[in-house]
Amino acid sequence: MTRVTTMVIAALVLAGSGSLAKAQETPAEAQNKQIVLEFYEKALNGKNPEAAASYFGSHYTQHNPLVADGAEGFRKFVEFLRQKYPEAHSEAKRVFADGDYVIIHSHAVQEPGTKGAAIIDIFRLENKKIVEHWDVIQPLPETASNSNGMF
Amino acid sequence: MTRVTTMVIAALVLAGSGSLAKAQETPAEAQNKQIVLEFYEKALNGKNPEAAASYFGSHYTQHNPLVADGAEGFRKFVEFLRQKYPEAHSEAKRVFADGDYVIIHSHAVQEPGTKGAAIIDIFRLENKKIVEHWDVIQPLPETASNSNGMF
Image 1 (cartoon, one colour):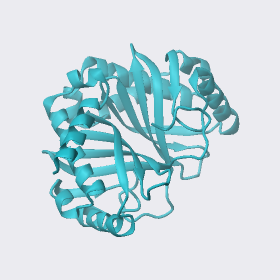
Image 2 (tube, one colour):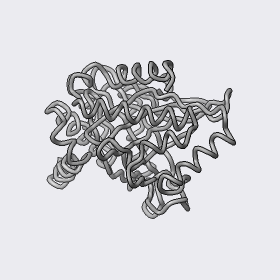
Image 3 (cartoon, chains in turn blue, brown):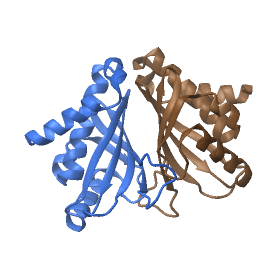
């Protein structure tokens, strides 16, 4: 991992989820955040399927309906991203942890100059390995009924 | 609140986010989950804007691009729901808390018999009042690349 990536992850963990969250979360929850954010950077921005795969447990249950199940399904998704959208970038805006779960709220842009999408991912871990994933994805709108933005 | 609603909320809080989460979360986080789930039931299933409004703080920042800002924007949204989709039902599948934030992963069906949408909501609280909301919404697909479902 590059120093920049490490700094980005450290900043996200610190900025994570409000000032109270840091004091209230357990060391295990802080570690889970760190693990998932490293995975997230390597998979979605580094587009490195081998590095990402090292974060999976003996099974990986995929709930994103566009991605095949398991580690192999995820590898194919990262390959697709690397080939079709080599400049795709995901920016984590908020990260939360609750027990074995880590939740990331992010802005994903497949092609530079496009508005991209808001995504919330939920990851479940077992023994510090990622074993299950859900997400919800919504394109950013052209106009909105309020001026607060989706983030 | 009816007994059934209370039981649903209690079951959700207990089922919430994995066995470890209950042991690891603080009393404040458990209370925040309870507050947001009560609000969620009263607003989205009860469609009672006045009851829902009592959960807001002195401000309420709305990030859903289809809803106007503030408590008044939310009131109009609940009125719209009550009039246009009186049978709309939201079922919380998972609930998480991290400090002042509560996250709900749910299945929302506006009209019975339709597939509905997966939604993840993020609520921020200040002093036990809801002051900010983000969400991401995705219609359930007709077909999927895996057999795990979106929940």
